[in-house]
Image (cartoon, rainbow, N blue to C red; front, top):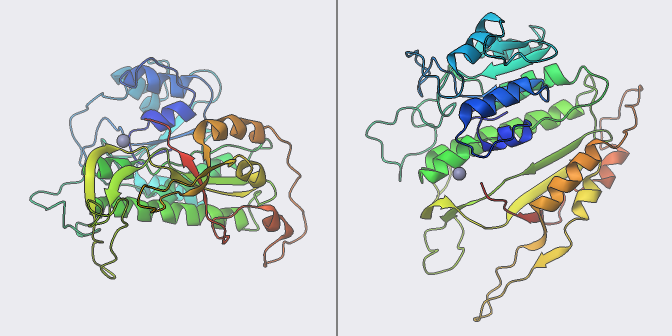
Length: 354
Ligand SMILES: [Zn+2]
């Protein structure tokens, strides 16, 4: 699941696609749908809508015409229905929200193709706007695009019914696009939306009517890389932070590139197996420059180590959820977690390129 194209690098990698190039879009999307790995796919790349959510003549950038026909008519001319249950398309926002709220039953395999081309919000029109000063939400968000929270709740409605647990990757993918464009206002919007999705997922885990709790669920929140965004004084003071200009004001900032950085990124974990992830952080960044300034970010691991451990953790049997009503205050399992709310600094991880 992502807020950018459903066959973009991260969802494709998590979705079982294998290709020599990320540019092989039709092949990647075909493989994601047909391989039988996934039960839910979500992102943009709708052939029939532009970046403002307006209907357009079909552009078959991510789906071939035949593959798109498979989704809209239930046939298998393009071969993406594959083995097993058929895919059902949900693209209208109200349809996705209805699945999220439970008003509408989730189909066996759910394809949420947002009615937008490249990003669900971040590419919407901004004619004449100044990217260096424009504040978040100065242009209203598109009402035609579901929020990341709506997408995540619809996915959980579909995935939580089985007996074998599930894995869900939720990417706030559009923050990367806003940062490539050095467009801080839109990047903040995407952070905001991702933050809301994480909060909704935490609330879902803690709700008594879901099969999840912190003893049988692991939540990992991290980034695959950072960008060269620093404070206004960063040319003089290395790594100087953003300057708080007060509520409603764009923070003081300076961009140093339109590409990814190789800075360490935060890694937050909570729930079943969290201690095993915390134990990966066996390195420490204590860097100090010649003038004695400390830039070290503390305990670190690398993303390859995390990537090797996660499938292992997913295969661990988990104890069934207790049938009795759970206490409202922190349950014992929470004591055995490394939480974002804990006073210890978060573990940092090296970025992994893409
Ligand atoms: Zn990028």
